[in-house]
Image (cartoon, rainbow, N blue to C red; front, side, top):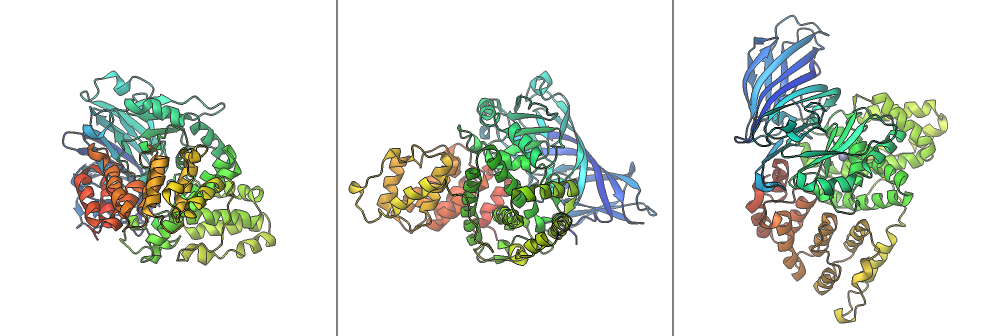
Length: 637
Ligand SMILES: [Zn+2]
């Protein structure tokens, strides 16, 4: 079965290596240059190679150094325009052929966001960054844009601002003077990168802006290095937030699975319009600045992103239908790392928080139950972003946790995890291949008893089940959640009491971590909405509407907008909308977890308010976020 989101003929001929020669033109907001593919033929007389492209201007094509005929097919709204290149006849299976495409990007390229200098911390230089997952690599370069195709790449990028890519930097050195000592914003420098490990196209990434580097201390006994990139204005805060934990998490993950293969694990803190919490681009995880909470409480995102080095970047889902293999496994291991580095209670706590998000997302899809499934049967050309939610993450992680418990706990489960990763490292697999290996492993290591245990799992319900419930009622260690639950319960039972007679205090939250505050506010949402007077009282007492911690602020807005017709919802809807559009600064809160949820909640209170706020700053959002918010607000079908 081929990838439902790609038009490429990668089963007949596939890229092994691609060389990008690019020039970044900040003034005209284009990347122009060439992509040279080394293609391995797997079908005799293949006749043509088909690449995915979207909104690229193709200028010319050469095959083996000679001008070649090609055709750009009409644009499919989701899959883009297939680029067909004719190949000489008589090509033999097993041989290699080279194709070079000269092209440039356009304003419509969804993968790229070009920021004006006002939208950066420093306000002095523009900024460019890419987001290729799930299917936008084709809007940056002509590629066979399926995770089933794993490619090495090299890049030579000419830029007047420091340029970073998801690969090993060859020159100039990362720890040398910024921009090779040349004038930033003026002098062109050639940045050379090489990614020697085959990766799926969605991990190709570029960022360019006024960024500086600070290495983290070397982890004893490790060959790999870690460090952080950001604009100079944020580098202190970013270094402080992540320098303690990053290498420690990476070393702990190596204990669970196999050694880290990519040599370099760097972080890049992006401007606030970055649409995700993190993106696990190879060698260089991209991060939202909303993680800079100042208390190191949001490092679970780092644990998540670095875990992708094995689950996703190492063992990759074959196509969008099996995306849960990346995210479910990664979320499961991320939480196991929390248990290893902190306590078992931290793992349980993380599952509790995830469960609330899962419930919300399953509810969001009541009218499209297909997307409540773990394994989704996409039609050819269906948009995988329509299915993007917490389902693959949390339903997936719960399935793996259930599996761990069913098979007899971590002692018998972790050796299997190591075997799974070793077996499929470097490959792209389907859910069926995953399950076959699982059965095969326990046939060898455990026999009939373990197979019986595996057979007791209702696989169909986990893979294809719809609705709001998991197939099994899951129990989690809730010790870290108890105090939050108790406080929420007190508020719930106070709903009939007059405000002047309430006995809540500012100090109620004194001993709460920021995550416990999140759980408290989420727990409140599980009750009937409180009267507006009580919500106002809570807001003024706990100062949750002005906190800089975006996780807490999101939950507060969700809590007070829960009853869309209440006076308090009307009041805070405007504030919530203003928060995500950046309050006139142009610095939107572009992380979709925050802005999409807020826009959806505001929309239920006041459609016009939501739409007008969005329209005002819509160009400041990343093209992917913009598209999905437009769908949420019914501006786009
Ligand atoms: Zn992930």
